[in-house]
Image 1 (cartoon, rainbow, N blue to C red):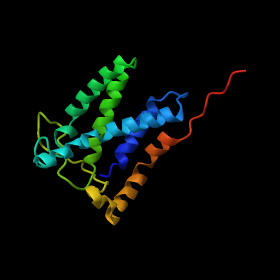
Image 2 (tube, rainbow, N blue to C red):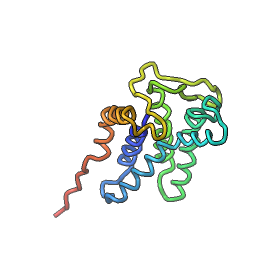
Image 3 (cartoon, rainbow, N blue to C red):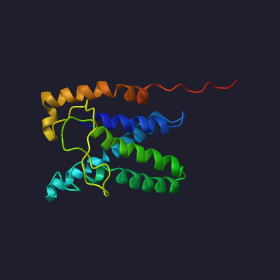
Image 4 (cartoon, rainbow, N blue to C red):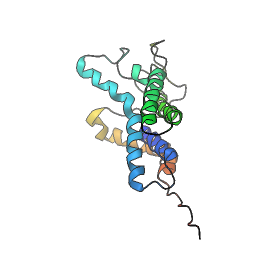
Length: 176
């Protein structure tokens, strides 16, 4: 999957967290942070440089693509949010859902080896029974005609999330 769909999830999460009086700059920063969080499970590709193979437990779409990873990271971010005066539970739940959305979306792709959703209890890689999202070429291959085609498909599939995230918000009417 190209990262477009994952970023759309992060942007929508940021919008759901934003206050109606948030400035555009604050909302943009929030969208950037939540989108980065939605992309975080792909940090596992760094392992390739250290000899970690694709199918290893810590390989691509392994441990970082599990529900345990999403829950653990969500709880850590909830603790950090509480230290900043924000709601622990709201942040922990939303962060866990955003991170968990990544492997769930990856199971909807037509390539790769599936995701180890239940690691560390089970290393089995899973795919969804319906796989409408084409897998994107890795690296500079994304700039190819195939990569652009995958990006176009994702833009269409995730258009509702982008619309929700970017739709202008009505400002509350000033009281006389």
